[in-house]
Length: 276
Image 1: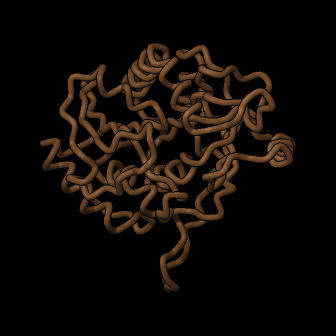
Image 2 (image 1 turned 90 degrees about the vertical axis):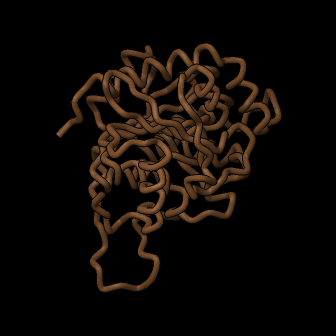
Image 3 (image 1 turned 60 degrees about the vertical axis):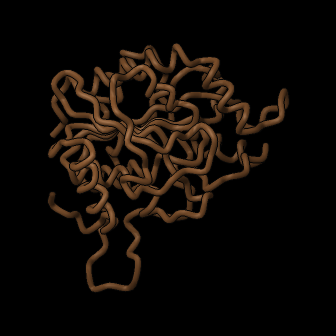
């Protein structure tokens, strides 16, 4: 393992524990499951390892299973995290991205991130995936922030091609999905109608409370990055009262489609060579 100066130093410990618990010295890819998407675990023949055993922060939000597994697909080793923690739970950007950082330390050259999101674009359909082609980081933080004043130069990372265009296009085709821009906000409250209008004016198609910090951390580590949003609600909808229960209910109702789509996505990322 070669530590990256932009990564959380605790990620090295997590990576070492992953090697031990998974009995695996190298990863090829990693997948992070968002809210309500951890049902994928039941479709896999894999032993689950708790986040606690990996010294990963444990999510408190329903719909996130605090466990991980190693699976082998198309001859590739893939670490799957069946949940994540968020800024609004009181975690720092370094803690939010620790699982992804640990996976890249073990060599994961492709990272696929997923989430449940609210639709801003009228073209998006609830219960369907959208492939993220770009993002707006409105969280107010960044995993590349220094933890204290330091003589180490900051990492002025180029994010112009953060979400790999070729992989994004492959996933959109394989899933028959639209592509869009994801706006990440700190949460945990949902957006007001005025905020949704502002986000739409800024070019956002989706809104959520995760993913972009992990995407930045993975990109900083040199991984090929792609991301999927399951549209679970209409942002600032006048037809219903927004709630996390509605998010997880939509995910559950779309379970067969979600699991099938995630298997398709896993096949895509393990059937290609990482982009240079």
